[in-house]
Image 1 (tube, rainbow, N blue to C red):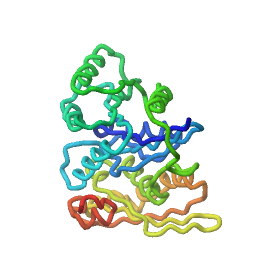
Image 2: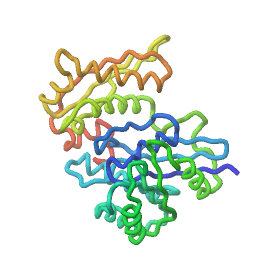
Image 3: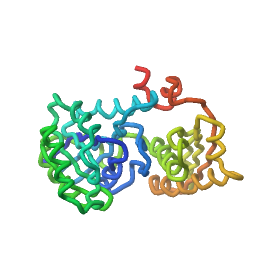
Image 4: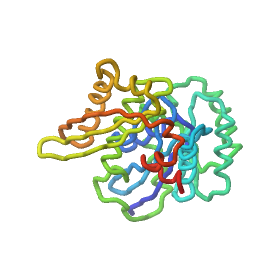
Amino acid sequence: MFKSGFVSIIGEPNVGKSTLLNRILKQKVAIVSNKPQTTRNVFSGIYNSDDSQIIFIDTPGIHQAKTKLGEYMSSAALSTVKSVDLVMFLINAYDDALEYNIEILNNLKGIKTPVFLIVNKLDTITDYERLNKAVDIYKNAYEFTGVFGISALNGDNVDLLLLDIKNLLEEGPKFYPDGEISDRPETFLIQEFIREKILEFTHEEVPHSVMVYLESYKNKKKIVEILATIVVERKSQKGIIIGKAGSMLKRIGSAARIDIEALLGAKVYLELFCKVEENWRNREFYLKTYGYKEETE
């Protein structure tokens, strides 16, 4: 029997949703950083095995939005829960029960979709009595189909979680051809890999003010040539991105190129530019231009 289905991964920012997706796929498709709101778009990673195909939907962290971009991110995450076969709700093992997580669960009440409570980052704790108290609060707040403790970073119990997901899913077709790893094109993943390095190398307000898009993508015989633009909101941020004598821009490009070459399986020439579009995260024209079309609907 071949099983297939769609699984949405939701939770607060920085809870390990993208790390879990990469672990399940055994390949990097989602960018990861220690900064909240790393994931901005809803996109799918495709898990294939001999007996199943599972489409895992990575979502932005659900949070109290301060910009129109933030509003889009939270609403986009919650919009996935009614159209999938399973919801995985992630929490951090080291946190006590959070009121904001209870609010998220209240938003799920009334849906017929099964929900797994996934306690992530189990490798970070030793006080299991405190953890059990927090989990009990969540279980009293919502009727979960199952509760699982994992470490997405180390892979602890992730294979067992996959087995339980497969057992829950029904017989179904393949939705994507073999070899597909995402519902997004390579160009989207390339933009994200560049943005990930900006998140890694810059601090304070700069990471959240950044957007990346490709100016051109040329697949030549021996090399892929990519020109990309980094968009920021202020001139001071542009100075930080470029760095002294272009040092930061070069650092970002060199690090991103390694991931892009691994993705494409080819040599890559990557050139980066930087420009300012003031307050783009609150301007619907730019949100639409940069791919957040739902924001204007």
